[in-house]
Image (tube, rainbow, N blue to C red; front, side, top):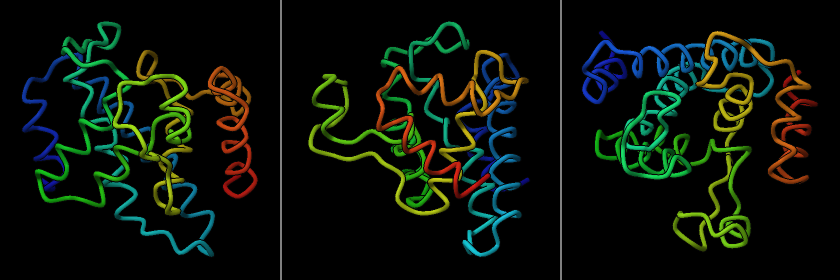
Length: 180
């Protein structure tokens, strides 16, 4: 059993619907991200890291209040990335932690956090920086946790991001030019 699977099992010990959703979603994101890696060797992306980080990018959801995906914690869902980052840092995986905290939307710039009064640390940009972070963030937009077995079309994923503002959707569009 891989170390990543051991970490998932530590925080999701029950074989329940919450873990099924997490694993189904994470495996789908990992598979799509790996397809992008394979299609773009010129980007020199760390494939093993992408697979591992995609599997734990949402590890913090269990502490959030999102009953629709069987998460009955106390924290607002928007904090799942920060929570996941704390978990992965505590487990000794600081690079994986960055993926956790930078994958929401197409990233959360500090000005959006402030403008929207999101319950996240102020004056911090949570935007993907490396190719690995960007590929996982991009792949994540094609799979929801409410319907984890279904892949969205590019148009559906783009449309879903429009509600978060033009620059969010534009980042997705810019990544599509590279990854598709």
